[in-house]
Amino acid sequence: MIASQNHLFEIAQVRPLLAVIVLCGSFLAQVAGFPADEHLTVSPTAGKTQQQLVAELISARQSNEKRPSADNDLSLGGALKAIGEADAAAKFFDRALTKNPKLSDAWLERGFIESDRGDWSKAAELFRRAASIAPVNARARLALGEMLLRMGDFDGAAKEFKTASEINARSCGPHQGLGLVYLQQGKAEESEAEFRRALASCALSNEAQKGLARALAYEHKWQEAASLMQKIATANPNSSEAVSSLATALANLGDKAGSEHEFARARQLSQKELIALRAQGDRNWGVSLRNDGKLQDATVAFRRALEEDPTLCDAHDDLGEVLWVRKDLAGALSEFQAAVQCNPGSSTSQNNLGAALLYYGHDVDGAIEHLRAAVDSKPGFALARLNLGKALAAKQDFSAAEPEFRAAIAIDPDLAAAHLNLGLILATKEGNMSAEAQKELQTGLRLDPRLRDSIPRQYVAHLQ
Image (tube, rainbow, N blue to C red; front, side):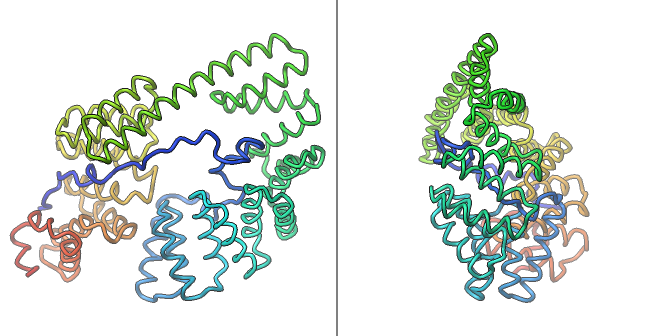
């Protein structure tokens, strides 16, 4: 018998970070359309399934526990980063570098983490270290060039992009980077040539298409620019920037009716974006109030945000979590359902709804469905894996529950409830308190002694 299967551990723990509205993410976002959260480099884990990523994480953690080393720290850090656990990954990259400062890839991975955090200067120094240790590391050169470009060092960026291209002539990233550099410097013909080279290698690169369109517009090649901008606007129908650029191209072609139509669309989209920004501001305020424990005021703020923008899906989750804490369980369940309906791809929404259904206990199959969706969306979501394991255990499907608990522990070894549930699963399957079951139960209690009351009495005697 698995104790406390319906306890909703994660509702009190899942808290989205305070969202920050940034009108212009970077200099490049304003000038060249290069988003602050996109990179020229391609992750080596791209294309792997979530099962593969988790399996690699479990294997890396086991190897590191058996044979601690700089290389194993690097592998474990990479596995954690691949499933979205950047903070945990950074600790292992740092540990690897303490043991061996000559690991170019460890400097590189730390640089990517700092870049994603928005510290481009620090990221540049880390990438520079990676490139100095391994001068032919094309990814390090490309990443360094990107940071220099973001910081306005166009000559330095161009040097790194050219070097990266010499190392790997087939990569589209260096050409895209050079295209952006030349666009900033007003060298439209050179920019056009580089973006065309980028698209020859990566025909579907959205950013390379945008860059080429800008270069063509700069050269007043409006016919080709308009054709390309039409493709971009079609692919991004809710982007006021894309639609406005198309309108400008049509105006320069003398298509007055088409231009006016697109400018009208752009104005409508801009108005929607302003409404969305205002609603996001109310949501941000609600998160701040919730973090300060002002739940009633937070509830009002989240409801106001949803009144302004019903498509602000995360606000449904925020409101549901506040209502749950306020013991309005029915209201919370309704908001979690609305959040999933609004954005089925949200791992947080799927997890919250699955956990709430599991807590009620009358739709365990539904809980499993939503929790599987959460894990599929975010393989490194340890709490969702814990909840999925609990839901499967509630169905007596112990063979399927066990790997979920093990995966949750591999992702977050400090997740006490995962250790506890794994120990109970093992004891139940084996019909006795094995050494491993005892170890997992003791680890869970060491991490959170409050969980002792959830252990069946017949097992407690083995833990004295």
